[in-house]
Length: 566
Figure 1 (cartoon, helix red, strand yellow):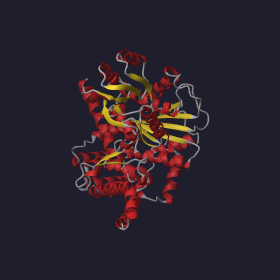
Figure 2 (spheres, one colour):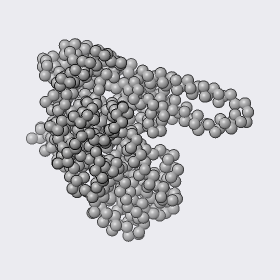
Figure 3 (spheres, one colour):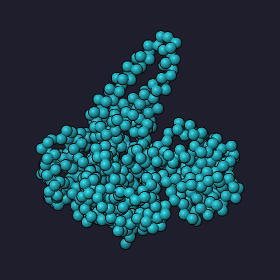
Figure 4 (cartoon, helix red, strand yellow):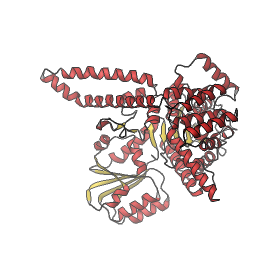
């Protein structure tokens, strides 16, 4: 809740003190920031009659002096140039400039020098440089997400740009929370170390005055996605995670245009726990229960619809008209969730995902190399299994058994190459180089550490309520270790001499390379059962298996092309 409230509060403050008709001018990043916490009708209530992108405003010459312009932009040199041009020949009566992060002195001087017409009423920093998709989950929506996999020497300027964007995003989160954290990072990751050090430098040296909040028990932990490459490769069976895996969610919106007979008003739907009570109650439930709960919602709606058909008096009519907006909203909600579940059921059947997923979960959670090899081989031979599912199965097998039987692993590589020519086995080897056992800090499969082996055995004996959701992301173990004060200093060192005794109260875990909705679910559930500590999860983007594989392919292509040039 905390980040969504902080961003909403910033936008309220931007809009409510400026009376009269307004135009809100955004850039591609701040469009996402605003759209996940503020609806179109919220904007209208604040007298915002037009929303424009900063680069398209540049192209228009039409005067609109009756409107007050509210700009909310990232503090990039590109945006400052846009403003410079627009302030040179102003089209609006007033200009109110808000930036989502820290402005440097040079940028402030440029803006001051450009405002010859004296139309700028205010310049402020409102730290909302992140997309708060859920109460405890934020993303930086970085498009070139594969940079974290590249060696430092390969593309230093782009890698620096990538790191700068991450440091900006993390610092904005802590400015919005009004906290300055103690910082730790994953020892085996160069990029996690670099980001932790650069964030510390910003907070404790360059901008120490801005971060001079009272000391609180707050921790920032910077992790690398490659520490757990299993979670983004798995099929998902809880509602929000499953929608993202099978269809895709971008800024809490789901695009259904490519699906056959979807009604026109359902071609793009919003899935927001803030705006949709059914989704809020069911986003972490498993697929089987979702079907039952939607049926219950449909039944309730039909009861209401039936009572609405029974209009006999003027009073009935007035009552119906009063309740009509709520009725329309409920009707839209019912059809939205029915559409989503129907489309996902078709995909599950078409790709035989129940069969595939059972083996995935076995690979992720249970031992037995021989049986796993046989199960994966059978699925590779199954004509109904899609290429992407074959690739994911071989990857999951390789991550788990890379050291156990090289001959059988090679056989799977060869079979994958013969069955799915598009996906060469080279991508599996590249994944092992990036995220194999030698690169990892933790006990990803719970088979190294005695405590984890015992925990897994206990889980196996108790039986699992649902075979499709038995996997727990590595993040769950990390949160448990932090909450018990057991996160090892040797594996997760501190930056500088800011050491934290005891247990923190607020923890931001940032994953370079991206988060998953399975992990954000773990965070929300952990928070609901551990009242003394609050976790917030953030990352460079929100992954599904398709996006994770694309990042791998992009990184592999760049590394290959640079080695051929040498």
